[in-house]
Length: 287
Image (cartoon, rainbow, N blue to C red):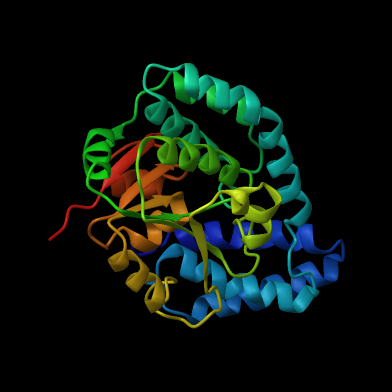
């Protein structure tokens, strides 16, 4: 998915928010914001939105010396959902379709996106999502594919959200036999995206038969922020489940990928043919 003109002021708003999290120095805010605006003016605006973000994000972390401005918020998010974990686990087990409920909880977790939202209530979101239909729903296709799949790749999105992804993975492992499950996380902090430190913190690394790979987030002005090794990971797995809006922006042009997300901006809503706030479980059909 290519960025559009509306993505540029959105990027600038996010840059200022990150700067204010990184330092209280107003002079640095102005200096670095001017630099990032100049940088945005010089790079290809047909990159996907997350590629634009990683280009400017690294300028900010280098200038402020704060490599992980969302660190405390990520810990808080993980802790908040971990407190709900036993109750949600019981909810899944008691439901008529545990896997569908786990998918609903996983998509609810996508609200925990500080790139798109400044504030959210995860319990309120869970309650809403459980009572709301998917605007796009490929759940039946997903479960049919699971019956013959031996491998699954989960492209993780945010800290906090990853706890609900853990519930989904546990539910899948209780019902299907996989030779391998792979979880891909970012290799270094960017916004509140999950890293290997987050999956270790929430205990996802304790589940047997799950391997982890790191997505390279180094700026390089590629056409997409997904490096070539991620493309090969997609080809290696029978099922690819991509979580969240940024992964949708980067991977929506690839065929054979399932996407589970909340549309949190009008650009993504328009691209999916839905509406802002829509719950999306979609699939890119193979060519």
